[in-house]
Image 1: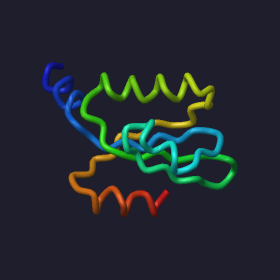
Image 2: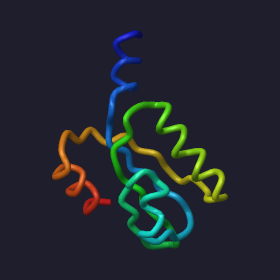
Image 3: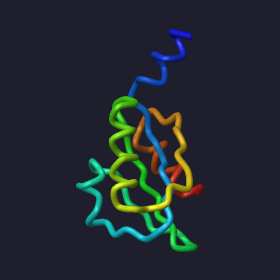
Image 4: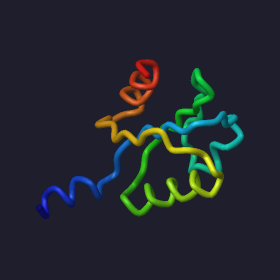
Length: 90
């Protein structure tokens, strides 16, 4: 159980999908995440998260904006290239 906790508390890339459209200007407020509008009035936020506490902080910002949370996906990406490739797959 301790090994599992360590893995989850390490930096990882996350894809967070919300209902509602956000523009690129929100990137700074979301700690530099890439903001990508999607079909069906949805937005994909993607970027590195240093640990679980930071992830909870991002989720709190989404809650505070009143945006419905659709999904949170931890992406096993070790580089920016892997992150960019996964964005085009969504």
